Amino acid sequence: MVQLSLFGPGPTAPPPKPAGDGVVRLRVLITVKAAPQPSAKYGETVCVAGVNLDLQRPGWVRLYPINFRDLSSDARFRKYDIVSLDARPAQADQRRESWNPILTSISRETHLRTWHQRRGWLDPYLEDSMCALNRAVRERPDAQSLALVRPKDIDGLLITQHPGWTPEEQRKIDAYVRQPALFADHERIPLEAPRFQAAYRYRCHDPQCRGHKQGCLDWELVAFQRNFRHASDAELRHALEEKFLHQMCAPDREVAFYVGNQAKRVHVFSVLGVYWPPRR
Image (cartoon, rainbow, N blue to C red; front, side, top):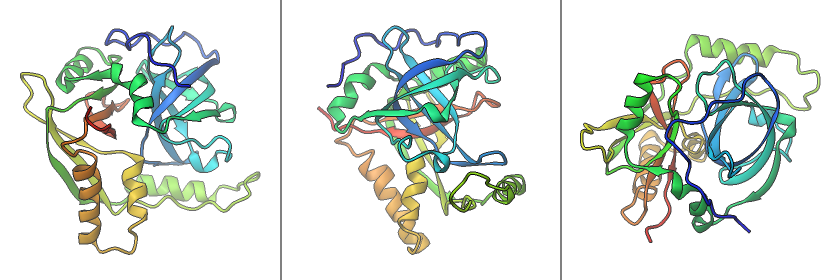
């Protein structure tokens, strides 16, 4: 049975991480899996986020780095899974929500299949002003870096050709593939760049909002394209727009965007996923 959140997510500023690198047991509802990025050490890394289900310490949690291809089958989780794991506070990352997961400790508990189950935990986190988040990080780099923002209106989805990996990113991929995999039982496959990238254009509810354009880093955007690998560019563009704009952001959906910023450029927020339960 899913327990409803008895308390809201607390004040806008997230609580400080514990000092030191002591291990803490977390119980997290996964809401975000960002698209994998090249890494020399891990081959590819994924940023995962969710909400802490500890009612004594509610709030957003960022888990990084994670290489899903290296996880055991028992540890591989999906969006809206509840997982428990050990993690250390990411002291090299000023963002208060950031933790370094211990991958061998990940345990899946259950999956929230229905929007009704998910809403009990996530609706208390809905907020209306992306502009307020932008203002906060300009004032202090460790301000709130993850949120679930409800747009006032959505202007569209801008789909453009992915430029491919930069020379530095390609070097990371090549270096990882060449590393001897002493304990791996599978061949290391280079991470491929997706054919297209996308960005949402929308306005939030802030009275002074002049509009936002944020790149979509959702894992689903990349995975979706793999299913259309034999489609033409025009067919794939159409399919992406139908799925990520007309279906997910349809008028009969209560749409909100999972957003997060970058550690090195805290003023740059991206859409990490779409929250789209049906209107009640």
